[in-house]
Length: 314
Image (cartoon, rainbow, N blue to C red; front, side):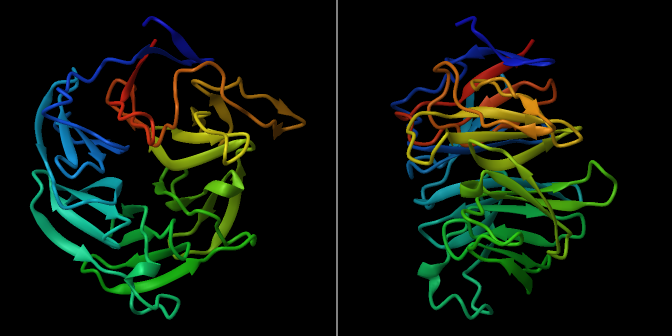
């Protein structure tokens, strides 16, 4: 397929057959998230317990696979800790965050936060994403549970939490993802509030700063690369609009500059107008992985067991 999608300087050639995985040997179910390591290998998380992690080369070959213990595999982040990289897996069925080596060895497990009275049992905790700060603190979004952001130190000791479900500035409705934004010098946290069609910015201590409105976009986690924010929009227009996803890209000023698979971003009186899907490139995009050449890899949820879509920047 030679289709080119996107807008402005962020345009991409679509490759639906980038993955060379043998579906019999390396089956997938929901392809949730994807990260790239310093060595250039790509790690795909899916919730088929025959191989929760597929390790890809840049040309789509499966180098290795591992993981049979993550039935609710949802969030995948990578952290460089004193020169060694680790993966953080959130599992919504196990109600845990699991830190592993790149080859799958379990390093530590974060159980449900008993320190917070809102959690009566592990069933109340369904973590969706993590991010690790420069000082080693770990932030977890409980996007399918109590809607808190929970902060731990590097050893897993509880520090604080904030948020919860609601319509207030500091609250969330599906706190699906989180990222650390260093683009403006002082680091801050960007947290998804998916059903509010927004990203919300906080200090590293959880003080609300501002919201980035994304009308029409039911957005997954923010992914920051260079000066830009990338995010998968799993549905558009309304939350029951099946198969209506696309990708959105924001600049340093948090304005959308391209929407691959969606309508062109339009601002009227500095206000972004509602967006929706355009074309049929995507079904339910769930994440964006950006490589060193600024190509994109798009895993998808509930999309017929499809492998990631590759978008080559043109």
